[in-house]
Length: 287
Ligand code: HEC
Ligand code: HEC
Image (cartoon, rainbow, N blue to C red; front, side, top):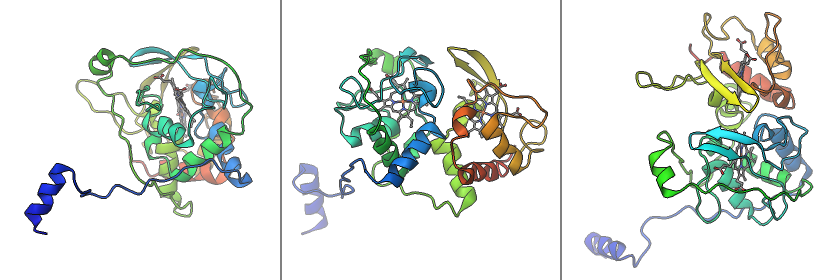
């Protein structure tokens, strides 16, 4: 067929001219290692309970209800246990889509701010998380889900973007320590959600450069720079100090940060190898 002819048929929609990635069938897994990895992420670096817990600590049940403030106003974190009022009736891929793309089944938007960074979470880690959530005891707790109106969506949330990554997101080999550390920092623990400097009219957001005001229902604090800047950041910290901090909240000068703000109570549940990868990566971030 001639090129023109093919283009014509494409326009008519008679033949499929670009190949969509093959639909991946996603099913929660029952293998103990997968569930263990999911548990380690949910209770550790991904810290889902910071918002979805009834209290912001790793042992709290994930039945939601706490009020979180975002660019649209106030919203209740939802019940993510596998009950009818939670995510019990959702397909596994719907849960992954809500985590990574901030879209509910049916196409409703949820706050993209809340899950920002997760969009590049690997398929393997996202699947491990869902597999673990399926093993939680279902908690029946009906919460009002927020529906963002057309007006809200188009007048508020100027920085709102919800890139939806289509296709397979590969895992980073933990042997590539720095690259893997970057993945964990940006797409699992999402340190930048609090530690990027805030954008202003004059300045763009600066990567991990600090000075952002973090507000929770328990008050507010400024997140400092965690780049390798010797003046503002972690330039004087070695890897062991960073790992120790992530497990305890202990700053080398002897002070302790508040775990209700920097979620070190969660981070301590991560593996030493994962924390070490983050530490090694942070030492490479220019200040
Ligand atoms: C910074 C706070 C925060 C963190 C951390 C967080 N979430 Fe959420 N999540 C929310 C809020 C708030 C909503 C509801 C947003 C809305 O309605 O606009 C939500 C919505 C959801 C939904 C949609 C549920 C529904 O019933 O509509 C799922 C599923 C979800 N989150 C799973 C997770 C998982 C799994 C993690 C950890 C990997 C996680 N979230 C981490 C705040 C958070
Ligand atoms: C929910 C917001 C939040 C997240 C997510 C977060 N932090 Fe923090 N972090 C803070 C705040 C706020 C402080 C200051 C706390 C205080 O002063 O009590 C802080 C303090 C720190 C400090 C102490 C720095 C100093 O000079 O005293 C380090 C180091 C740190 N965070 C590293 C990290 C790393 C690494 C991650 C990701 C693995 C991370 N944080 C994720 C909010 C956050």
